[in-house]
Amino acid sequence: MKYYLATLVVSLLLFVGCGGGKEQPKDGAAQPLTQAEETELFNKAKQLFGTLPDKMPGGENDNEDLVALGKKLYFETALSVNGAQSCNTCHDINEKAGVDNKKTSDGAVHGKVGRRNSPTVLNAGYQFVQFWDGRAKDLKEQAKGPILNPDEMAMPTEKEAEKRISKIPEYVDLFKKAFPNSKNPVTYDNIAEAIAAFERTLISKSRYDNYIAGNQAALTNEEKVGLKTFIDVGCITCHTGPLFGGNMYQKAGLVHPYENTQDLGRYEVTKVETDKFMFKVPMLRNAILTFPYFHDGAVATIEEAVKKMAYMNLGKDLKPEEISAIVKFLGALTDVNLEKKNIAKK
Image (cartoon, rainbow, N blue to C red; front, side, top):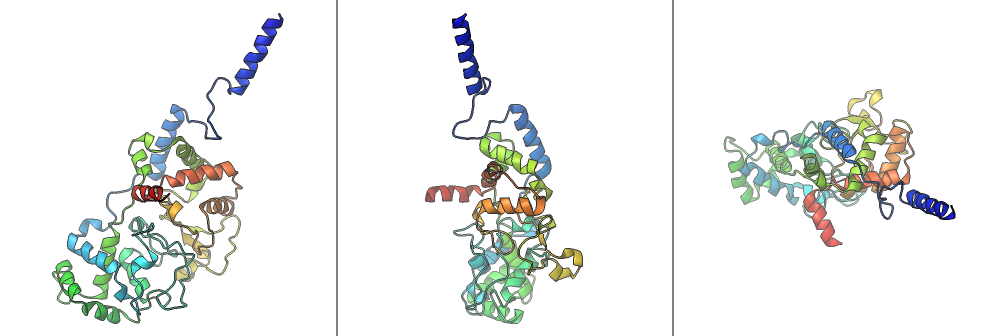
């Protein structure tokens, strides 16, 4: 009898210690999803987010000459008043994820600073509008703004920009090739069109894209748990579609107000009362690399951004493990080449 009781106690301890016979994750790792959960998650993700199209809107009409001209113009400092700045200065595609990682960007003129955080140019053309307040309908319209903005590249007029470019011999031939039917191809409109064409090539694909294409091993278990958490806590209220955002406006502080009440957002464009504090919902692709966060760049870390947004717009105080899980998933939205580059640096 004593032997039987001792055996029973040991068996019960083993059962409890092993979670009822189910293998436990090590070092606090997320509990592995069952096959049924994996299938349900995959189907739900495909429905909510879809897949990123192979070309951006308008890209089907671009050609090599136009893109080549746009690329050169994207890096052209002559488009700033003092030759100190190009598009790439604030939207760095050489070393960064299409941003400068500054709270707000420095202007070409010393002492001038932009009002809002510079968002990434990667995948930007997929968005339904451009700029935080949606004042530009597409990339071409957006490209015209910073060059003339006194706080950014600060060129005095469109004519001055045209004059600057016309004085560079190489551009004369490049514009003729890109716009063969134009009598005077070096125009401000064509400058913007060429830059937009190049930006339409800046398509960023991630391991998540491999996952949604059918390779479920492309994401780790922790990242899948993070995706599930992202959906379950309600991040999908605003962050849907293949960009995980970029397709709607939303109020910054829907449930609890955001501290910055100086920037009125979309209201500054429309003067409609209900547009106060409304901003374009940012894309979450490459979010890990595009710090600092929010329209004013006031939030330094991705963890703080997740926590704060959940509180402000969902009215939820997320648990540390929920925040950690979501951040894990957001890492899977990083461009595969940038991810490799960052791993190599470590």
